[in-house]
Image 1 (spheres, rainbow, N blue to C red):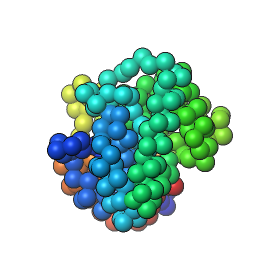
Image 2: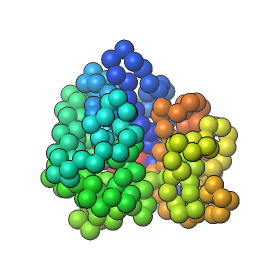
Image 3: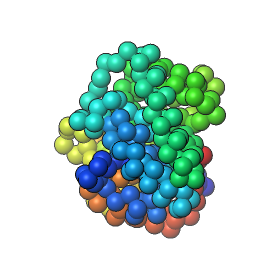
Image 4: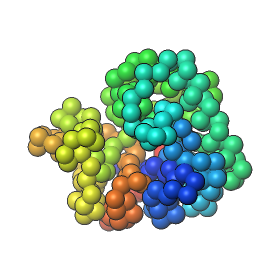
Length: 252
């Protein structure tokens, strides 16, 4: 592969509570999954984050989630699909306003947390997200896990789909992410993560928790902005990719 996008979750601070070093992360990645206020983020944070992304030439994406500030969007909610569609529409539209005011625009959509994982297999919720993107702007790409219901349904609906891999998360033999509640689910060694991503991109595979090799065809790699040592990991990933001759560039 000659090129890869690096994305990260940003804009997740709320009021006086701060999460992650968005300024530093946005100097390293090429796409920004900006929170939309439902799982994290407040209006001032979102506008400021979009402005920082724009100044750094980083593409802005809407990271939509469940209406779950207390749980950081990491708890599954069995929401009615029609309501979920409207929730996603509301979030994308709200972030678009902040992005425009900051001199940029929303260029893609990615679910967050529990919604991301739900749309891997949950047909009705996956379709709800697709319906929201279709209703808002059918030119927006959808970023998600390879083999997921979300990407399958988005593709059938004529949306552009972007397959994503994760730098700092462990994989099951089936190619899904190990739940955060299990030991070893989140990786935190920058050197290990850097080498791992280079292997993902250049070899198209990753080693699962049982030692087996899982095929990966990714156009974007996520480095979580709220992980411990996120800046060090993003630095190692970008340096490793560039040393391997991989062009780090946005997909959108």
